[in-house]
Image 1 (tube, helix red, strand yellow):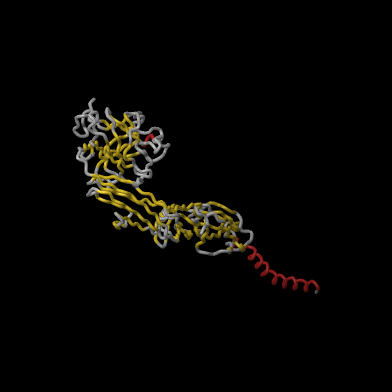
Image 2: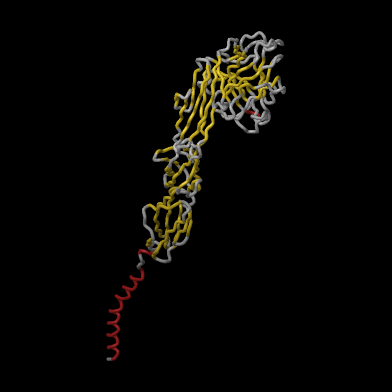
Length: 473
């Protein structure tokens, strides 16, 4: 009986355990689908999600993956394809402007997640002006305002300068003439494709006391009938609002900066000038003009250089230490009422300014046929026929004083009419007394007022002559 009961219990247990064993066997043979592909795809979030990130050149760029699931995932950051970090964060300094691709990659058991960010690195400007941060600067009137924009960072920079809302320049340096006493409003703008810089400041011009010079320094003047007299004013300072008034024998005759008078009749005349500026400052000057009869003697024009392509033997250079010295016929550089000629004589010692006085010989002969006269031992001055030479001189702005000598390195000839102490910027008349027994004389053209050679680098080494006349009196 006991045996039978045990058999029945065993049968019941076998019937119950068999399905469970089969179920466990089947379950043990199944595999997780995610493990069969190598792992789960990482899930990543970031602390910035802009579609395009903009940053200044030289600035530190920072971006981080704030969550990474699973945490065992490995992270890498690429900048234009180059690995720059192997952590969830990237710190990177962009030293050049341009467009960059920043890529984040997270890997979990061979499964990869990636995301790209577009970064635009801006070409920022760093500029300072030579006046620093000044908002108001002072300059004398009739001076040049020179301000330079100094670029410390930034490429492809465009410049724009405006004065009183008018564009006056588009380079890095402003050079502007301040010809009024007033307040000038200056605005500077620089820009490139990415950035802009602006700065505004004002310039107040000031004026000094009224100071002028005149082209005729002698108070006693003499001209012949048929001559033209010209006197001009050169304003050194205080010229704001300056008005001019010229009188001839106390009768107003001109209100310009230049007085001209055709000497049509003999006589003695009084010339007056009065100038008053905006501040009421005044300059007065008078001259006495004596007009004498026109000369009945012959005037021999050695050369006026019109129609001559080349020089003959009338004019020569001596002591030519430099092969670059030049003596040539050229176009008149200053056509004016003082000299309307089209052609003149150019003396060019620019290759050796400050090392020599520059020597030009003027030769005389009895028989003359213009510029190309043959040189001879007998000259027109020997007879005492011609006693004076008159010539027109143009110095530009050079402080040169043509120094006449008898022959080279000889005694200085008497100057009857000299050029002005201050260059008027126009043609002038020089007259020289000619002694007897002279075959030629020399102009040392690069002399100063005291007869010394000019200093090195003074002026451009160029002077012009025209209308050489031998005068019989």
